[in-house]
Image (tube, rainbow, N blue to C red; front, top):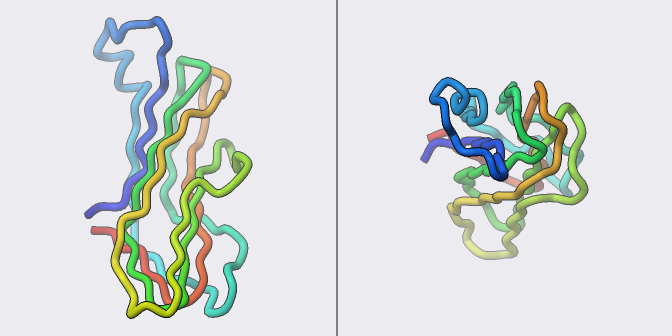
Length: 138
């Protein structure tokens, strides 16, 4: 599975009349490398994944969808959130923790609409974690 950040501009009441307009309203970015958790104990501060998507939006809202395949060892956890123009919306958007189980591989994803002004923006995906966790790039 490829790790991705998919961004769609939500065009309320406006049809996709021109193909050249649609390409500016949709974007996708992939994880450039696999991620390893830098925090062996408790979860640390959020850091960038390397997923970055500059996009000129034409609407007042965007739909951000992200999905990561993660491998967790016992007592590990993974959290992710988007940033819009270097600002993180309130709260973590997706998280997964396991206890003393043998470990697991799972897909962690979220999808949420955010109000923003039309114009150029930079969207990023950040993560935090604890323990032995790897996010795979495919």
